[in-house]
Image (cartoon, each protein chain N blue to C red):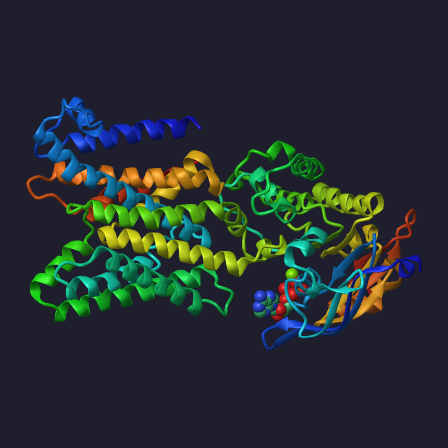
Length: 268
Length: 325
Ligand SMILES: Nc1ncnc2c1ncn2[C@@H]1O[C@H](COP(=O)(O)OP(=O)(O)O)[C@@H](O)[C@H]1O
Ligand SMILES: [Mg+2]
């Protein structure tokens, strides 16, 4: 498994993470290899968003540590962390009259000083983010006139404008039509391959995850059930354990990617 | 940008009208003569303009600008387009503190009044902040808490009034309904000082507000010290609404409407919104006061009632337009 040889850029070590007294993730050991595409999968409420928040340094583990490049994340000032790690949160909302461009420009926040001027680099980052998310035409549109998918792409653009080496994407494909879902996954893979960006994303579609990701991490009740390459992880046994669904696994002939197909009683 | 020029032109017209119209009309030529200290000004015009109308117009404008800016900050920090210091209890806190002063003193000292009003507004802001703290301060929760605290402070003001002497209570009641008829240069200087602090502070954190309105998690993930910025915003809001309430009592709706006008004209960037909001707020109060003292003679309405009368339909129009956009 070549991915295991790459240096971990993000790690959790014996991390217990939660809100107040309530622990959501217990004793979690995870390492995310640099320049890879990792997908978190698991049932609703199993702690995927919580894990991303901890990886972004937004919530501090109650026990254990989260490391970036081997250093504890809590050692970094927030802004410096935000220059390295970009997080696209799950349920986003922007004020109605705000334009897409207004939103995307906010992604430059960590790169600006209190009174620093807007630079050419800021402009370039925003334009590129708009172009790769297919939102350049929408730049001047107000949020209340956009569809759910367009809004989602604007938020992705904002996160990309931050130009971080680590991207944490919480359900980036939700609300998108199939073609934009695939565009987003292709973009993720392209950023990983061409720019060495490290991406951790939450997805719900097992087959899309298997097709595009380098690593899968399957979570249930705040613990990792299985992690590794799609072919290793996606077995009918593990899918049953995590999602409580009976599936048959078939192999896509050209790419060898595993595909899950639900089994109905009638099939048996 | 053209709409901003139109708004500025409109301001000049309203300001001149407010100086010209009254029980005794003053011509534009005389107004200009008084304002430029020219020998052509006659004694009566000098007295009317300099001692009565000019202070009134300036104070009204500053009150409006303060309330409007406070409203902009409140709407942004609570991420709620309906939030204004009047609704969330900040003004009521200032008013409670001011009523105590008014009922106790024959002639309330201007400085003491505005400091106490600020203290009242700040206490209220802190109470809202503290009570809504542990659940991550969701907007709805803050507003519900604000409404509760607001009624509490209102009840407090009434309670204190019950035990004051009737004259003092009457003074407090007139003042509570929002009026600028007894404007003095002393009040103007005090309010101008507070307003300068409030506007300068808002200008400094304009860019921070642009990010904060996207939500705590989004802001924090971009590296913003969210709690610090929010605390600064609460203080600025208290500074501005406390000063406005100390100067003119409760003037409704300005803090709600002016930011909406600004957003419609220049969009969501706080750096652009700030001057337009302040200008629109100032105009609203001067215009409302002009209407209140001309349309309803010989018994002029307090400007606070007038802004409510003018403001409500305008707000309805905003809602209607949004629905039909
Ligand atoms: N801000 C929060 N405060 C308290 N509990 C939370 C918060 N966010 C999520 N939770 C709880 O943590 C658990 C895991 O949530 P989450 O990480 O969002 O799951 P997922 O993203 O896998 O659906 C849920 O039971 C949820 O109720
Ligand atoms: Mg989630």
